[in-house]
Amino acid sequence: MSKKLCKLIGKKIKEDIKTGRLGIDTIEKLSFEADVARSTIRELMNGNSDPRVGTLLKIVKALGYIDLKEFLSSI
Image (cartoon, rainbow, N blue to C red; front, side, top):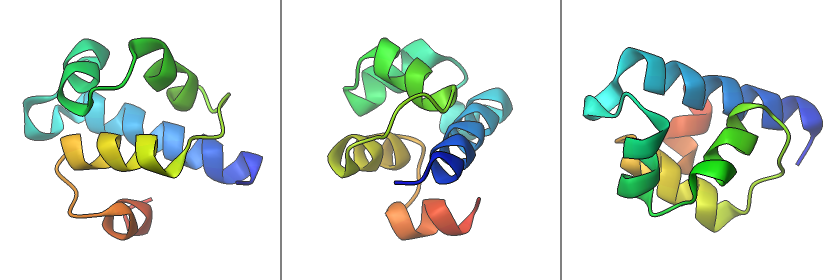
């Protein structure tokens, strides 16, 4: 995945947490709902990580997106 796309994904996750999408307004809540480590989410949000598709799918589903396509089209 390109560095630019990783940064855009991180920015969108940050934005969704900031707006409290589906009541998920903290990294801790997202971590719990997605069953993904907080450190992984932080790295994604900072654009410092090239996420695995499975991990990213867990996160976007926890944020209420139908699938990865819907999430990426919202960027």
